[in-house]
Amino acid sequence: KDARSENTHKYVLKAIRCNDSDDIKMLKDETITGTGPSVEKWGTRIYCHCVYNTRTKNIQRIKNSSGPGLIGLYIMQHVMTGVTSGGSKNQQFATLDKFINRIIPNQKLGVKSKKATLLDLQSKIQKTLRSFYRVPRIHGDLHDQNIMVVFSIRNKLLKVMRVTIIDYGATYT
Image 1: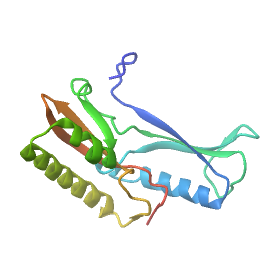
Image 2: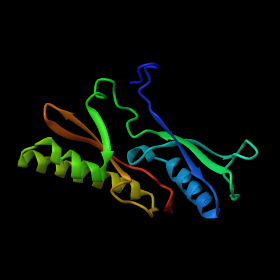
Image 3: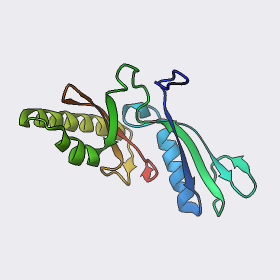
């Protein structure tokens, strides 16, 4: 919960330099994927997008033009959007890599608890990937830095809340 606005919704502004046609294509692919149906089941929704021309100070729709001074912009959900105020103190997020290699080892969990956490993580990754691939598409850059794990630590218990895919720039259908 935002201390000033009492808002439980969090957002991210992403800026991408659009120097060539590949950059514009990645921006288009990312915004098409992030504005698609059921995106909240596997990722973070993109709400609005545009291209800003730093030379003319104009904002325009994403089209095929590219070049120096063009910056693609979009506003999307933060991975922690929707975390209730009661749980926000205990909930955190990390990349899959960081969660597996740093968070789990540092929690001093017993073998059974560690195994249960990893099985729960595996189940949530499978569910997220099934939802993502329900619409035929390929994520051309899916790796452990583009998968986010939302988790809580409470009374020395580590619980995976959800798994989210991010960075759809290399995604195509």
